[in-house]
Length: 381
Image 1: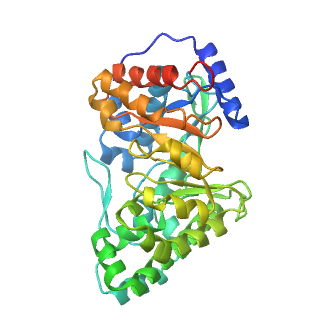
Image 2 (image 1 turned 90 degrees about the vertical axis):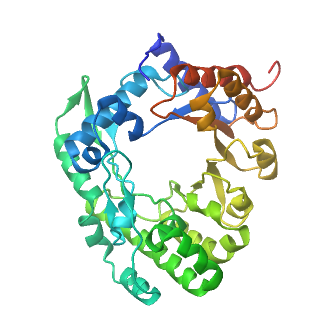
Image 3 (image 1 turned 120 degrees about the vertical axis):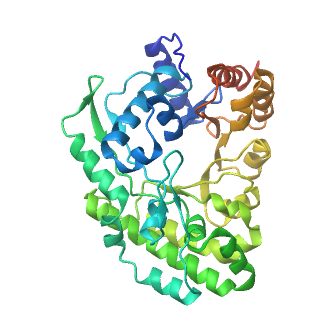
């Protein structure tokens, strides 16, 4: 992807600001359409390797800034374009949590880093997790080192005539079940759920407790001044939930979710779930109090979901493979299926598309234009 559209950036940013302000009031007359990407695309732009990105703070800083600048210069969507007042860079090491739990993390040259499950008996595993000192685990982690070194590099740094600020990266989790699956091995954990549910419940509970302690340690060490639980709302992902049933989730995982959320926030609760996880939506809404859901894909009836859960807001995801492969007609048909009258609820529904390195610019344009055309709300839609 390398073409840059001709856009009146000031006018675009003004319209985007007005759209999201209206969305916050429940008065938007069109469904917002946003795009996202990650280091997979950025590294394709700069020619650096994943290994360099995860191990060299100078490379990660440069790649992130160049990637974000390209994105803001090139991708037309319902987010601001052009340089921001301040470039905000969040250090990235997606395997930070497994590493903090003692897993070996494989740094691959040309792909994302990946973790290996811990070995040993069930008793050994529980004992090892109990013995973890979250503060020391943070201090020993790659993410902490990246954070500190990138902060030093950004002291007084200007990029495209704007200051650069490193953002606190330690306030969240990829999800207690997902992390438990990395620590134990997802297949082994699923067998535990069926064959030894008491062990699985205890393991996931320990992961939850240490997750809360790790996040608190991050805030303390980074001197954020944040007091937990925060009134400002908080959310987490837990993508591996898609592999278990609603009954198993409610019995063996949801109590730990509740404990984590209660420790993190007294405000609104948010969850990200990818994949076929719709079996969990009722419990998340009714029993966990989640009011913002990110990730439901094209296979979910978003209009029906919004009708069933009147306080829910959805950030739906387009089919990223359709956006990648096309053709344009299929992209437009996908957006038509997502932008039904029932789904287009003001202040409650928006769509995110994801860009791979190989996604053609014409497909990005087609998705956004179809969203603008078909996303009108109200008379004349």
